[in-house]
Image 1 (cartoon, rainbow, N blue to C red):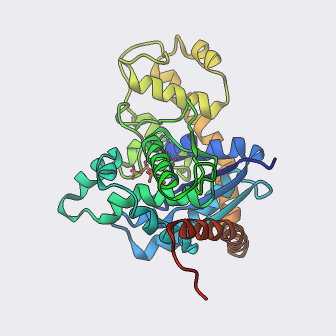
Image 2 (image 1 turned 180 degrees about the vertical axis):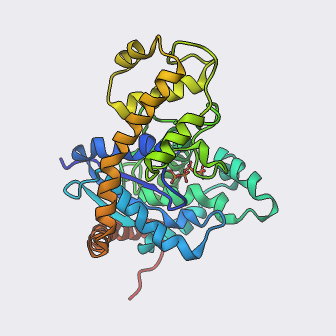
Length: 336
Ligand code: AQP
């Protein structure tokens, strides 16, 4: 039996931050040799909120370069751009027609983001989870490694699969594969540096709330110096009264590569004045090799283009095959 398939992606909106890295990309890298992997830059998702056409293409390349810089290995994985494969849009339309409207209206991300856009909220934002379902289902993915915030969208994808197969496939011959979310416990929800109860997010207006993967050592130092803490001495994990403490210790745990027990023992008697420089140094050192690799990739645009071209060719063959199967199940005629 061949390897199971993995599909995941990140939007080219703003800078990638530690949440995107620790919640998603780091996990892709760690598991990639066990799976047949497809990682896309989901640029069609990026236009579900107001975007800048002047920077979309460059942002897309930047994210693809960051995938390579973070350790995506082309021996195990393919990298491609979502909008380069038209099957994503086409399958979205087909799935739209079988997805009940109220399923989409119940999505937490839609409710949260729609509020921010007031009367200008677009249909694309409501439809975001169906596009995400199409991304996953085109590749018949077995596993989808994501952060905790995407869990509800994965559940919706599974509901769409069950509905489609029930209505349009034979019970013993499903057309679409049921994917499973792959959510790691630690790092699944990295919190804001300015409020430990809210997730670290690209759209937070405060730059101080997140550490971006391409931040300079000075920026990292400044952000950690000014991050929110509490007046308690001695640092501990998992205290619901101390969300910032838990978040910062978890960042240290993940970026240092130490075990939870080691970090708990090391930090139990520390004050913030001692811990913050430690976290700063650890973060700078963890991001440095990735930043250097990113620069090397960006200096060789031809190489990056060839990676995306190869990725598209492999991905498109699978995507078109699934699309044909879905259209056949729905009863469309075949062009002659
Ligand atoms: N804070 C987070 N902790 C853990 N994982 C996270 N992810 C995002 N934020 C965190 C995971 O990153 C992957 C990429 O998600 P995306 O492209 O949808 O990113 P995004 O939603 O644009 O990133 P933000 O920062 O979450 O954006 P806004 O501000 O728009 O809400 C996903 O696997 C996601 O789970």
